[in-house]
Length: 308
Image (tube, rainbow, N blue to C red; front, side, top):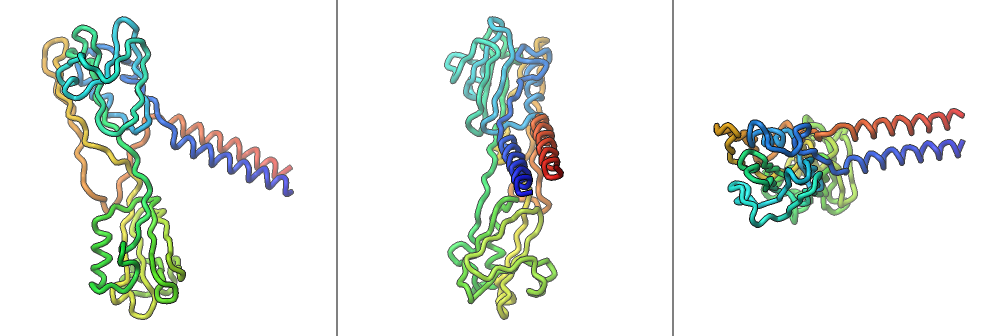
């Protein structure tokens, strides 16, 4: 039985490791998909629209599919991109297919330097985001977790200029025996009632993981401490990406000579939304399916080992 249990535990560990590796794996984006890297029929808007459907993150790869000798790819700065100037490229690839790793966040620009291909729309601008790291917040900073002189507004103001996301954590610094921390529901928070707490930590410092979206409430249950302002509420949003401003891509004339309107750039909003915002899905869902299949297979093997 012990051996079967060991097999089961091993299978679970392998499943978790596979999921972790897959979740952090960079994506390869086939530029233009079926259109590939060519002079598009409807001008630069073709690649603008393609990029608008993608989510680019640091570590991702752009793959440009083209016939060697007919096209090339040059990575350029914004001024060169706007002017279709290929005189001083950052990188230049002449053999297809060509891969470029998006190693930094921000705007990246690519053009074809052959003849008038760029001015006819064979150009691509992408905006690369970086996933925000998990943060451990020290409640009250240097004040710590105590009865504040300014009342409840002290901790309200401390939380007001911060963005709390799933995966972040709160550290409450206090002297054991002088204070504690209880995570409670809203009604208990409003009435400073410490009974039936979700979780109570009596030893300082105390750490609380913010593992769900929504409002989280904390109080000190020592006599009158909560009513004197030792209480904190935070709003936790879904994990998202920190995305630099979307590049403004000027329209290029289509082969017919008519001006092609630039695609609109999405408008961002500062600060967390009370309801939270969900980061866009990855352009390729196949890796998730593969992990799910691997997980099911390994767990089936483990279950069989336990039965037999």
